[in-house]
Image (tube, rainbow, N blue to C red; front, top):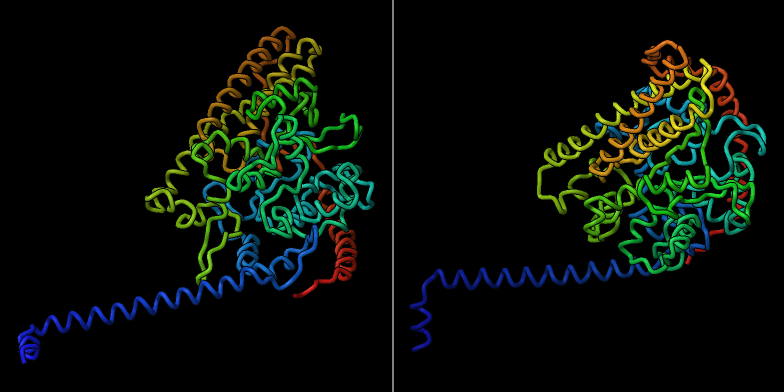
Length: 506
């Protein structure tokens, strides 16, 4: 009776509270059971691959059988719908945007054709289509070496494994046309057995060895940048290797260090040049894409942030966490790439990036204008009887100044990755270019040549290419014939070869 009386005296809200608590506990237990069930499903998925991936398997779709989420995200690199203020994944004719570059590269392939790089999906197609690779109708034709394929495809490590590194580099670009058809993908960065990150290109390993470093001791976080550094670096073709004389052997110029002055010192010591400038006769250096070098001294690298943290952030879908293989500008994925660390609005982050880029590119443009004038004035000096001795120091200054400009321009994202360093490099280049022009002005007066020298009419890409004498109609016609006749044969041969490769399902 006493218990019943106590129950009757209990307030109604207490009963409701007990009821609500019971419902909440049941809900939590249900969610826990559901989560455990999902994790079991994920475990089954992760550790039960569908196909056996063979050594050096170049076909990305085969890897995609085991890793559909990563593969599906990777296929988004074929998209071309994003254009930021300066870059993005859209096809942009950079010579149309900035015709001065035609003159800066006079006598070199980039004066014919230079497009903003698209996603990795287009790597093979874009290198076939560019006028820089010309129109080789036979395997031994064309201006470019076989080495130019090195960063374009997972077929490259396959071929290097089959024929040897030196033999892969030997000969002309068209030599591998039918062998390289799979665009940049899985085997470029992953071990087929363990899926661990691995270095598949020997030039990076060799560069580390010459520095006394063992790349196999790199941490996983370091590897998330080093797999990118296989290709996104400054490099040159070394024809002087004792074990590969005359072969365009891919080499990273890091022996003296990895900043721009150390790289220039390396090139000067071995007397290397990529080409001789058509107007000024300067022995020129062409910077490739020193993304890794410029990244290293930046804020993100100093804080241990890897390339993949920003360009391949983690994603979650259907309870599964995976790395987004849609390699792209973080500005097209600010929420997952930037806001994980920076608690700012997308608008503020985008403005922050553009402010940095604006300042760098403003100064870079000034250096471009000065370099164009230096090349034109140097030509004027030669035309008026200048001697090699009179021009030697001037040409050295032009060589160094333009490499510094190119180092800043060719490093994709360098204006953001390390804006202070890039501004320092441009400032140094401006000083050297100005000193070259002062010496040229003095020399032209001494030679009795007219001064100042008129700036060329290069307002458009067509004007600039006409100014340096490029036969663009002929080059385009030859390229079309190559695309129509040769490329289909390459693809046909590749399809016949790959149709014989069997895929083993578990």
